[in-house]
Length: 349
Ligand code: COA
Image 1 (spheres, rainbow, N blue to C red):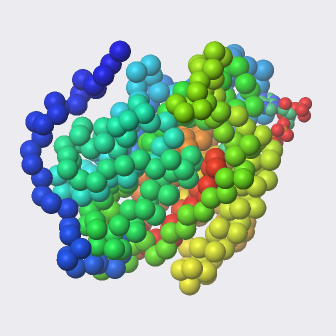
Image 2: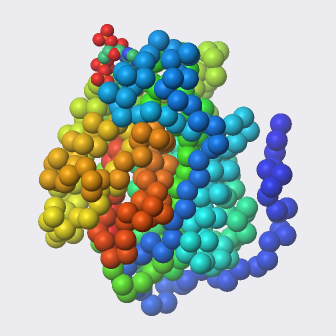
Image 3: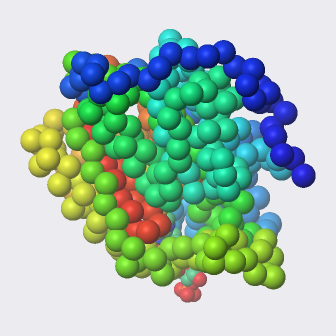
């Protein structure tokens, strides 16, 4: 059994770091994204590969979901490994040292181990020891929730430079004999560095949940509820896809309306929609609600499938690095996931 990642520095060997900001420090108005990064496992599983595993077809998967391929974590490759790489790339893009970070919030529903949190594991590996670090479990809304939490820390003066990560190895929960779910998911991670600033950044974030929908999308086992004798100890995604689809479209429809209203903005002021990448048809429905043509929507679901908390920051990093998203543009980020949870962020990049 591996108790400690070999790539981690030994505990206590990282240098002492500056104290995080105290309540007495100046409170700046906005949290701004100053760097993005992402990471995907090397292994790619195409729809054609899946045709050999379950009774499905490339045509069915593409027309129902928009997915053509997904990345799958190798044996031993963890959520923390992907999160670490994405975070390193975001720090590099921001020109920020790990020791300057005073907060790490990591959205995940597939942590490496039960505890410490994956945020703590990544913190130590980056050499950011001493700052606040914790995970947020909001299923597929994990990154947007984490962004909302970090924004609140910054708006209250408790953080000046934060790392927000969304990372998952969701395929570890996939039952590869169940065609209804196994074609939908992939692994990956994305990260952003936030800086407190007087220049516009995040205008508003919304986080909502309704636990009454648990039965539509859930993983039935856990430490406290117990595991079973089934394959993978009963760890598997249970989903009523058609029902999830309907609620997702309806919920995202009202979410984007509420978000615009909250920020006092109109549909036409949004330059890019960066949605959760679960299903192209859900994304198209949200774009239609916003009167946005699909050339203003970032789509990566074709290549990544649903990477849960990883999906929005992966799409954002792709949009930034491909030159689509430019400084000064307004972005609307949204996500929906198990719980149900749903969340949004409207920001100036
Ligand atoms: N390959 C081929 N056929 C499949 C299949 C697969 N991988 N999975 C299901 N089918 C079959 C079903 O058995 C059903 O057959 P039947 O008509 O003989 O009963 C048929 O396809 C239609 O199934 P249905 O569930 O109605 O399809 P759908 O159009 O709703 O699409 C999803 C299914 C899962 C793609 C869609 O409902 C969806 O994307 N839901 C949201 C899921 C999601 O995003 N979850 C994560 C939220 S964060």
